[in-house]
Image (cartoon, rainbow, N blue to C red; front, side, top):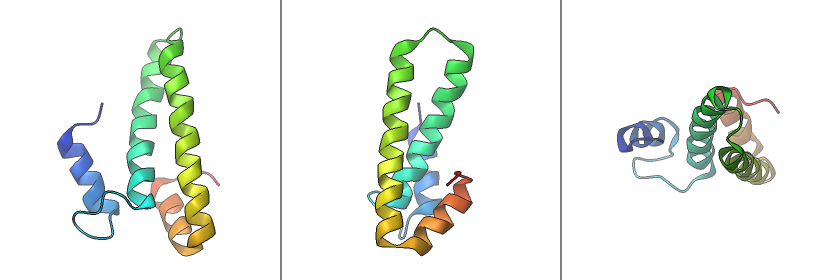
Amino acid sequence: MLTTRQKQKIIKETGIHGKDTGSPEVQVSLLTKRIDELASHLKKHKQDNHSRRGLLAMVADRQSHLNYLKKKNPKRYASITKKLEIKK
């Protein structure tokens, strides 16, 4: 679970302006952080199928945001994938 401070730090790093919470870059960054945390949880708890389903939903949501960004602004897409080290 992301704390408020962690979220604010991610927003500050990837947002276009200070209070930017809705841009695709911020959404992808937040989802990536949550995916990483949930993946580490699933490494310890292999039988947690409910969390696995949530993980798959988050990955699909992140991919939707990335596809939108790739279609609308390829430069921003390239920069966010490079910054977050997401494989294309």
